[in-house]
Length: 441
Image (tube, rainbow, N blue to C red; front, side):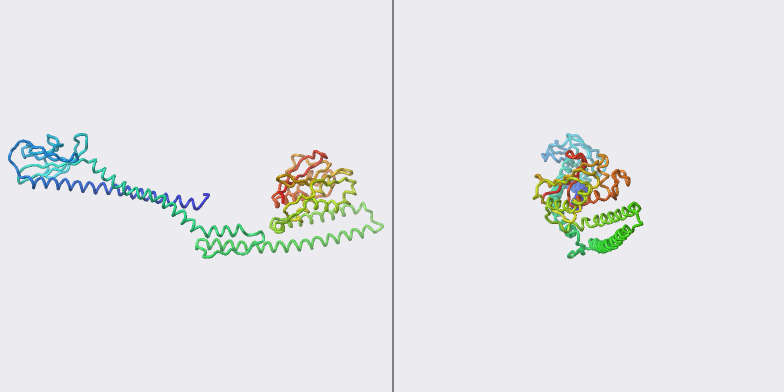
């Protein structure tokens, strides 16, 4: 059911049409019965008029009297001598003269006729009157047609009235839908409707209860994230300090501490990525959308990460349009760039090349990060965007520490910004090429 309004309109029109048809059918039957009774009474009255108007009982030559073609009459003597008849009546006896008063249906002159026989006992003669039956049905059809036409013409008018009436009745539901649709991601205030109908009161109450529970859940989640950021970062920082102090002791070899150092670094990386994933959720990021220069942001991140490139003697370049701008959350876009650039640097070997391109065409602002590393197998392009998935698992060929969240966070940020991400092999450098297409600012 796509539309309640159309469903109600069709249901009501179908009901009206069905009820009208049944009433017309019953009216037709009733009209036919009433017409039969009226015409039968008219035949009887006609026979009685003839009996009382004509008292001649002497034998005489047959006389014919002209009448309308829809009726005829005959006058017969008691010994079956035709005394008089109408011009359209048969010259023979129309019915058997047996009963004093009796109705009969006969066929004559290609029509069906209704006849009435009346015995004039005082003059010992018989009067037969007849009328065409098809005219009775024609009259009944005329009566029913006159009753049907207003009903048929009224159905389109009723449809228009019902359409607007249903629309007026559904107006509170549209107001509720409009209020819910216009709510911002951070707006969990109760819904208020003026003159709420009884049928919607429970829905409004339930919706407001749900919004209240969601608001409480978001508050708890924000508090948890803030507490987790503090509680997780603090001990990790303390562990790093303790490891630094432990390295200063002469009797401890660096090789013995390397696994611990790597474990602490991995733990810190996972914590930062998880907190970044939360912070870039749609309800948080969409509140801070603004015009962001993607080229300038990439330039800053490359400058901040220069020591990482220098440590592996990597050559990094930034090319493109310096005025490329997008609508988005600056922190989220910074996280996206940082993850893409860090991945390119981390999984590319020493003395490799990394190129970041920011360009704009007629429809999109495109960000590309390419490297000369080993790349990603084509069959893993979709999977590397999933959370906690890494090519070859923890035994990655590069030996780099990772948790499988970097590209998942990138995809999440891309979704928040209504953008598109495409993975392919770099035609320029031979490694992985990650292309993100944003809508222009």
